[in-house]
Length: 438
Image (cartoon, rainbow, N blue to C red; front, top):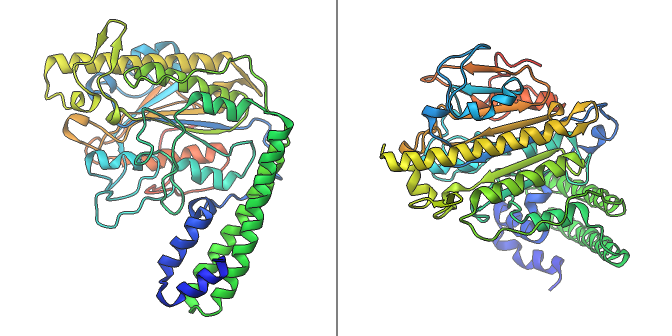
């Protein structure tokens, strides 16, 4: 059955939503809705490209040892932040931030970078995530517009990256596969095969475009407008295919790092986290991308290795419901401190690498946080948030009202503007974040 015949046969029973879903299956509609604005980005080259690494653990950390008890420039480092004291001048810690009306315990994990409201409500649909919003406005400046990574992630249900249409973008959880994408060129024959595949995708788009234009003549005004938007997405994807073809013919960067071996054992959570942070650093260092997301799926993590000679007594999720039990709290503190240690290693790596004009950390915003303020009580307010690098004036604790939180999306707007995106609003924001200065 041809595509045209399928449309004609289905016309009597198609609603607008069913039609778009049907076309989306054939054309990967979530990808079509990514509106990369390449026309302005291709003309604008910054002397120092800005980058962004966004990290979230969906069970957060113990709030007591994380948040400082004093604020301002002269604040006293908390027990957890003391693990990062070498880089105290390179990061800002925040309290009193959250997403308004984003409640529901674990249901908020997919909303950390979107700020979408009421994720447990009937008919909830997520909104675009920070990374994808930035990529839309900046266009394709690197081989990969963004990289979406995961550790122990439930790929079918969780992601930090969401399209404008509220569709989950699956996370890459294989360092080896990621390394090959970024750095292994492949033979000339392999490159030709990939180029031919891109051309085939283009010819399919042409065929579907012709068929759907014929079909649109019988649609009402609203349906035609929606279909016009769909055609716009098709044209933008065609441009993306052209750009992808150009990148296929461009030599991949060379790195001294050897091809990593994937760690299969889900109990080795922190070893996997460390490995993926290294891959994220390599991606930014090689300018393979300038935007990376990384979700640590603690919820999906079973009994895990706390130290060389100690495993947790239960899975990460039941452990997070500690009920103030001393043994659970002690294990969680070890897990949290290991995360802080990995952040310290990341900061060290980004300060040792030279960017276009100084340390790579100075042109890379590193956000670490969680959708969970207190996993023990499923509290989604007063989120643990830390921002390092990116050229901001750091070395402070910005404390906002812990009872009436400020929108976390205000921080996201400040980050977007630092990245070069001319936007005053994102998600639930009311402006930029007070007190954060370049």
